[in-house]
Length: 121
Image (cartoon, rainbow, N blue to C red; front, side, top):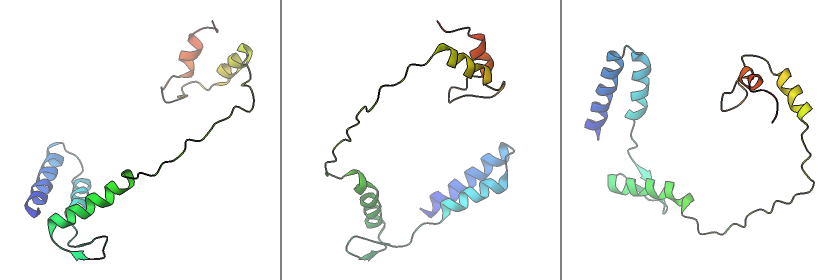
């Protein structure tokens, strides 16, 4: 395991040097990978240093939340009121008020593109 970490460290530092990237940042990243736990405690509060047992403890710990057999009822969503109609005048006003050059959503559509699209169809 230590041999693998050493190879990873050398490779990351070499890649950073070749890409002319920050060696300090690459060094910090490999330092995080370097520390390996020397012992773990299992569900029975027994401490172990055997690698196979430590792997099992980690697998059980991270798989436990997804192995639940508990049934959870889906929430019921009731429509309490009707969704109001949106007037085209409201849309036009909102488009006019948008600041130019700003992204409006995850799609990254700009205000200029929306304005150039014309009126509602």
